[in-house]
View (spheres, rainbow, N blue to C red):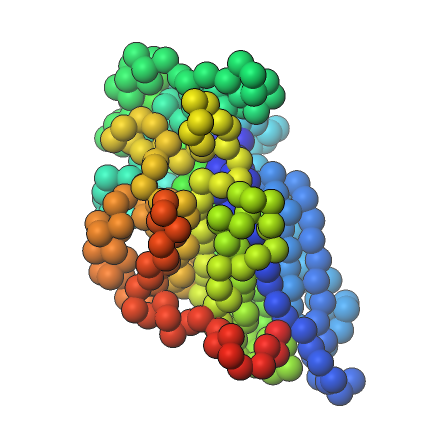
Length: 361
């Protein structure tokens, strides 16, 4: 599934620090659950509740919903009774495919975002991304015989990446492709969108003191965290250290409330050819993995938008990405450039934990 592949490859390990020291028995306690099977990654739910039973009820709801959305947004697998991205890509040419309203909404959000912030993410780039996916998979399995995709093959596939050939009918909840070779790929948004949807559903159910980490997409809420603090401390991995095998070293720790944090980077799932790292975040302008940055982290409330923007800013030059992020109220970003230089928006400084103060996490 391309969605999960992207997330496995590019999302940094995010350390979630939330303890509950010395609380009275009547106060909420910290509980956690991790599970597999959705979006090909580990999803962790950490929250505060008055009882294990109450927490388990919310966790069951979240787990069931993530598994449902995984099937709905899956590009690589078919499921009985489910029309998903795989169904659209294989059956949607000149034939409307009826899908769930959640999938319609996600497609419309992705189109809106790529129109607002053009030049990097195109959910219709699937034919190109599929070529890179196959070549990278082969290289990881057999590094000695690693290769690059044929340039002509990439360019031919790129002829079938126009978003105008995706037709959405809201009245009938149907999707149709007018190009038989067009392939959708929602890897830049699907897991973040799912994380946001699950978060909002849990809040609507009456719970607002939790965080979700879905393979690196982290969504915090506004409820109190450790010891009643009003922020959740989220550690961002140092990409240079990760390349050296030190996955525990942090670039910084952010203090967040009702915000999402998502990182795109080139330092996890990749292969080496000719001394260069080839990861999976492909620039639609060059049809090759972007070489602009080592990582980009985006903080904003909506996890789906944060997911989309982290990929967008990773592909774009720093100055252009900065222009984009400064247009969005409540959005901040930090870039790690290829030479190790760290740049960030002005508001991001305000979210960094003061390392000179006692760490209460």
